[in-house]
Each structure stands twice: as C-alpha cells, then as structure tokens.
Image: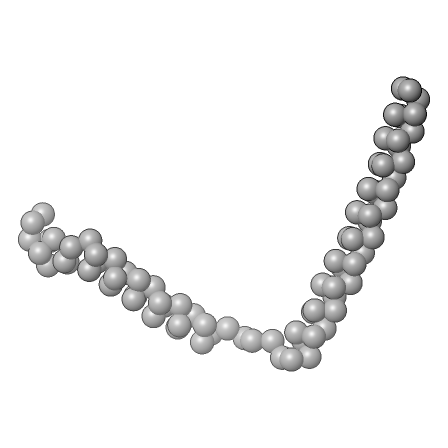
Length: 78
C-alpha cells in the first residue's frame, strides 16, 4: 500500500493527473462532434423562440383564467 502511494503520488498529484487526463479526453471527444452550420443554428433558434412564445401565451392565459376564477370565489365568500 505504501509503495502504491509512493508510485502514484499524494492525492493532490493524483487529482491533477486525473483532471489533465479528463481534459485530454474532452478535447478528443470535441474533435468528433459534428458542429451545426450557421443556418442550422439560426433555424433552431427560431424554433426555440416560437416555442417559448407559445408557452408564454399559454402560461399568461392560464394565469388570467385562474385569477378570474379565484376572484369569483372571493366575491362569493364576501
């Protein structure tokens, strides 16, 4: 056990070696990525913005409807 620790270094050295190995593997994986073209990014951005807009309208409508219902219930109680 002591010989293994002497061979591998202390936990700081092992941590640094592990981090370096991780970053080297990340760099290797990033070279395998098929990056989107500018047109694909723009198209995807519009799709996301449209989806966010639809969701915002739906949440606004649900909020307004629930506010109307709650106000109606409050009026019934008073």
